[in-house]
Amino acid sequence: MRFSFHAGYAASAQAAAPAPAPALRAQRGPRGAARSCGKRARQPQRPGPAQRPQPAQPLQQRSRQRGAAIISALLVVALSAILVSGMLWRQQVQVRRIENQRLLAQAQWVARGALDWTRLILRSEGDTSAGITYLGGVWGVPIAKTRLSDFLGQIGEVRAQQGAATYLSGSIEDAQAKFNLRNLVASPAPGVMQLDAEQIGAYQRLLVSLGVNSQLAKNTAVQVRASLMQSATRFQTVTSTSGTTSTPAIQSGAMGGATGGGFTDKPGIEDSEDSAAHAPLQMTSVDSLLDIPGYTPEMVARLRPFVTVLPTVTAVNMNTASAEVIAAVVPGMSLSSAQAFVARRQTVFFHNVGDVQLALRGAGVQQVSIDPNQFDVNTNYFLIHGRVQHERAEVDRTTLVYRDALTHTTRIVRVQDQL
Image (cartoon, rainbow, N blue to C red; front, side, top):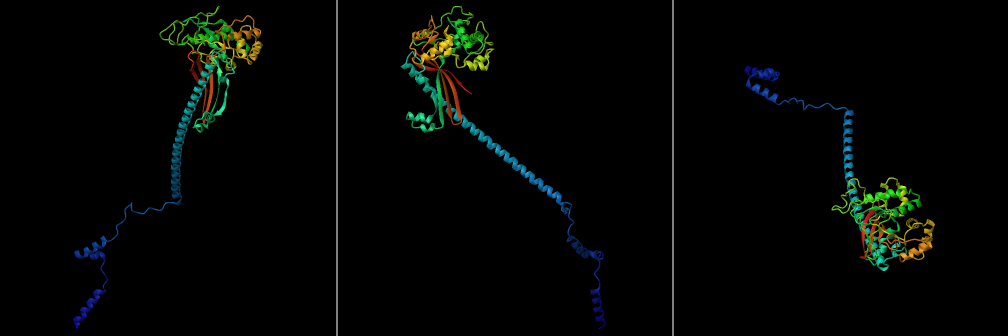
């Protein structure tokens, strides 16, 4: 009984004793050490610097970052919109350019068709009234602004409605009704070019009647001769209605006497007397007078209705010439007498040069001798003025046409577009 008491007391005392400290338990053999290591392994590891939670940023700094992001997004959107709009604009410009080229090409083809139609009128007019050109002919009737569809409908064209947006207008002008500046230089023989004193005097009278300095006449003649020195057609002549070539006779007292250097294997390039490098351009229109010192744009505008430049020497058509030109080319005729002559011509036109001589005598010009190389009643050169409006495109063109009386054909000499 005593033994049982002591054993139970020892067991209860051992259970009531406090647990040993970790350090003391670690010193107790391998079993306690194993238990202590296992407990340490199960403890959480200390986080590294990258895993440590950052401190909260201030509210103002976060607001700035969000504003910068919004601005960057807006800039990207704006730049994208600018690039897309630029591409669309360039594409639209390219499409409009192609449309304008197409419209211009169509307008030019319409102008070409109108020119061919006008040449047909001139050819038929020359066949019906051979040897006579007067203002009462069909060629002298101008065409007002007319819709192309209306014109095509009159001739029975089935596609007339396609020309509803195209308009035509134009007129035919007698080029030989004006004073030809080419007449200032005569070619009495092949290889010879000299100033024509009589024609220079006529041009001086025309300048005086128009209020322009008459001293410019000789300067103009010298310029015309200098420009013809390098021309391959400087000795070209005009075929008359009878089929013969018109060659002006040598004028007495002609000034100059300079020759064109005779014949050459390279016409228009080389010349024996004048240097091609310093030769002026050949005169092809009245605007070429501005190359001569002394002429002003106002003078040229005043001379334009009465002066022209043709490829060959031509005669003045007394059926169509104005009073100023007639008074200039007929020696001893005043402007008032020329106006009376033109007024009498409106009732009846001249059929031949003899009628012209009788009319001049009736106008008060005595002892007048008609030179067929200077006066005529027929015309070979015509100026065709045409305008075509096709939607946005517009073609304003002046064409010089030559009508050959021998072959009954017409050909285009030059074409000039008005800009």
